[in-house]
Every structure is written in C-alpha cells, then in structure tokens.
Length: 268
Image (cartoon, rainbow, N blue to C red; front, top):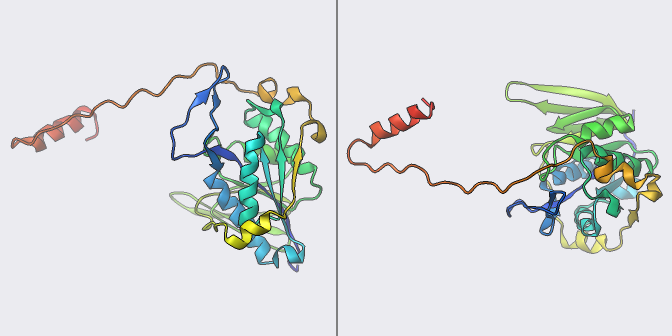
C-alpha cells in the first residue's frame, strides 16, 4: 500500500527543569513549576513524528503534526518550542480545574482533546514525563481512545497502514506491530532530536495554536483535578540532607579498612 499523508498528535509537557531541585508547594503538595521547560523525553516523540512526516513530504504534502499540551497558561511554552522545532500546529488544554490531576484524570482530558481533533493516525508520546516519571499516561490514553499501544519503542516505522516498533530490553529485542491508528511511546534511544533553527523560530510565529477549556471538550470540572483523580498525596517531606561519607586515611592498611567497610555493607 502506498504511504499516504499522516495526521499525528504528539503529547508535550511543561515540566520543571531537571537542572534544578524539584519542590512541592501548597496544601495539595503539587509540583512547583516556576522554572519549567519542554520535557526532554517529549522531544524524542516530536522527532519521531517529524521524521515520519518528513519522509512523506512534510506539511506541503498534507502531513500534520499537532503538539498537544495540558496545563496552565505558562505551559504554552512547551507548544511554542514544539512549533519552532517543526510541529505544524498546537493545541493547549488550559483550565484551572486541571490543577492537581493525577495520571488518570490527565489521560481523561487528553483523550477528550485528541477526539476533538477528528481522525488521527498516530498518537506519539515520550516514555515518561520527567516530573512524575510514572509512564502511566500512554497506556491509559490508549485504553480511553480504544487504540492499540506500542510502548517503549526504540525505533518506529510506518509502512502503508502498519506500524512497526522495536522494543529493546537488557536481554533481547522484539518487534511489535499494529495497524493504524495506534498510540506509540518512544524511548530516548529512538532518535536524535533536532533543535529549533532561525527559520523554524520565525515560521512558528505564523502557526496556529488553539486553546480550549474543559467545557469546550465536554468535560465537567469535577472529572479532573483532585475530585477526578484516583490517587492523592497525603503527606510530603523534604529529602534528608546527604550525610558525610566515611573517610579512610591510608596509613598502610587502607585496603583492609576498605574491604572491612564493604563487607559491613554487604557489598562483597
């Protein structure tokens, strides 16, 4: 079957920069997102989508890559960078009621947003978000959308209506396939993400970004946030300060002292 144009949705998330310590704030123990960026792991998902569409002639040939994010107004920065990298358009689900949503409530809102876009061939995500690191949303989203899931893909190909992904483990690799439409999560081994260039930055200013609320997606406020979540954080505490290690001064028997220390820790 001849390869045709693809309509791809890529999930992108606005997450705290991993260069800085992460903090919780407020009574709900929510992540402080003041210093946030596009999740690095989502860049691999975006690159996978762009590589597939570039091979089919890009946007000029009718291919579309929609960068979808969910979060407060500041989260639009994740969509903006995605457009600079090469996504053709953006969709931002922004509603105060979303604050405090767990993976289940998040996947519910994302599923509604994807359905609002009409027929979609591929939904591509990173293997996890760098803030929650649960890897739950891709599987939950595939169930809500009724799509087959190919998760933790280290390579991705689409031939005709068949999607083939390679999944690597420490001991073996396997190829898994599904027919379009399908949801795929890719690992950080899948590709080498591209960077925004000057042309892409200028082009992004003309690309369409749509912002929608829960009501526009047909969702009630209590379907998400703490009320719609299956989990909650009851308590949180600062990570204990790192204690000083054991210093062994070599006075001729440092090797013995080191061996005794490792044996005491049951490391040898």
